[in-house]
Amino acid sequence: MEKIDSFIILKFMHPFRLLFLIFLVIPLIEIYFLLVIGGIIGPLPTIAMVVFTAVLGAWLLRIEGFHTWFRLQQSMAQGKIPALEIVEGPILLVGGALLLTPGFFTDFLGFLCLFPATRRKIARYLLNKWLVQRVSGRPGGPGEQGPRTIEGEYRRKD
Image (cartoon, rainbow, N blue to C red; front, top):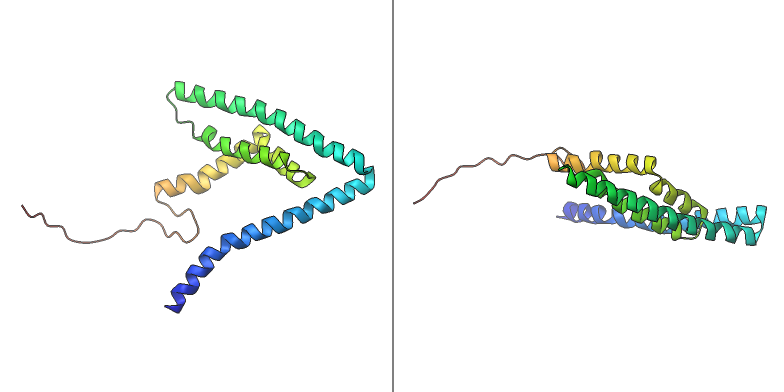
């Protein structure tokens, strides 16, 4: 019983540890870059750059969102499954949120999510690594062992 309880705690602890590190490490990286760049070019140009990247990111998000929406509609009109476009949508949202967050590190990550080439690579990775493997029954996630066969007998009573 104790073994099961510790397994459950470790299993649920992992995402919280990851989130804790994200919310701790990313702001520290942002503060570091803001201080370093602010020390080199001054505080007002640094603030101007942060505002400029937010405006540029919002503009780029709008354009790329329309392109993705158009490709989604084209795929559906041709009778194809728009899997890549469906996965690209949330990536665009995350990229836009990262660009609106003040800082240079999150801007870099946000632009990676908005540029078509890197966004498609991220989307293909997510499709291949997580979604396709889970649907096909192959191992795809942590703790997943693959398809299980349950043997038994069946009798029909009329």
